[in-house]
Length: 318
Image 1 (tube, rainbow, N blue to C red):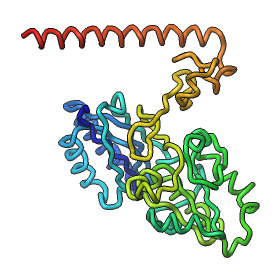
Image 2 (image 1 turned 180 degrees about the vertical axis):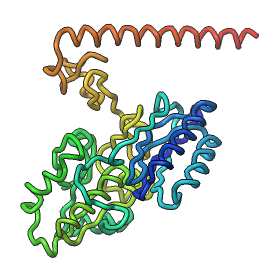
Image 3 (image 1 turned 135 degrees about the vertical axis):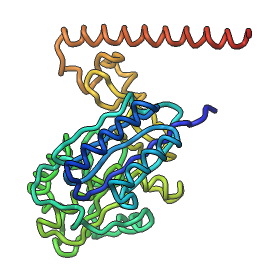
Image 4 (image 1 turned 60 degrees about the horizontal axis):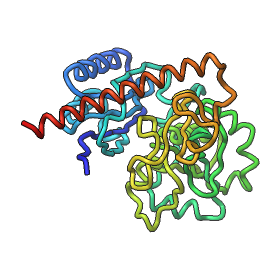
């Protein structure tokens, strides 16, 4: 078995983040990337920080020590996993208006959210008859795996969630004052902001899964695990199984949708060119371009394998 030399840290925190410090932290992180094998995707905004980083243990330690200068590290909602390979090509740092885009002003998750509950408490809550469960993720994430009986708002992005609340939430509640509303997402950030929205709108008995699905899978035993399927993640692994190992999904490089092993056996599927999700979304010229790109990728991969085989052979002979 290959060693898992890459540590992957997912994190987020809602806090007032001044522009001066945002720019300082960005520059410091880029300096670390310049000298080290350090990659990831980070989003900074005046409301906080969100993202995932990937590196060896020593580099991760350097980065976390840097975060300590700017952020209360105890409130970073950290989830850790490991991988044999890098899960990002490079480090990307984006400065946006929100660390997770909802588009609703005057929402303040750093001050007002629903009740955090751990994995054991979550299991008890979602099995109660007067509880509704809401998956706050996008529809393609839900299709890969979710909790049984959870409501899928069928959103394409998180900014569509407030409209779903206005249009549909009331119809799922038997009693607005007594029904428990249990919300979850991948790592906790979306459901935290979603609970803040619901509290602003006057809803009661609002709960969310601390650390999201990732923390749940880490904390819960296999016997007690109520999550079904795999959990989509926004990196090269695509999805994680119940043991937080790389799952069975790949990404369609034409449209970016996750495709299962079964999906790849469908007649519509052509690696790097199309899948059943995007069969009618692109022109013939687009597909020719995708096909050329895939040929180049295959050529590079074949060349890398030959070079690797040559190196191994030379090592055995020396």
